[in-house]
Image (cartoon, rainbow, N blue to C red; front, side, top):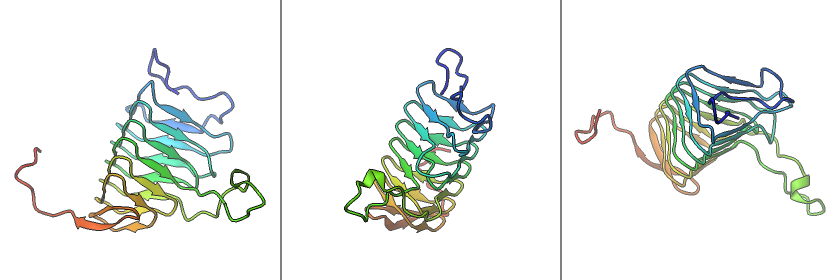
Length: 189
């Protein structure tokens, strides 16, 4: 976690020394929280990426890595669980409250409490391409693959593949639009 006085990131003493890699130009709010793994999960944050206050990255629910590309914005109250792994490309924006959960609890047996049943087999983790915008409070589940340039609407729940440049929304998420090649005149550069 970042030290409030210096902004430097400190790693829990029980974590392997290579459990966390943060590019020198990345910025992490002193109020963000990163919980590295003791099982070997790696968390990497790319150059010029920003992790804002109250965002959480937690290495739980599996042994997958969390790899965040360059120039990404992880806004307040986003929660990323490592689970089966998270790959975030470059220039990705996660709006406030986004949840990325690449793991699912096993729940089939009635004679064992769900919290004691472990996890279902992985569906491949969560992969987000370059230049993607994930709207506020969207949820990306295990197996979600978001193509380059896609937009996920606020509050959407995604568990499958979103093709490049498509706009998806709803619960469950479905295609609701397509990013145009045209330049809008009312947009600032």
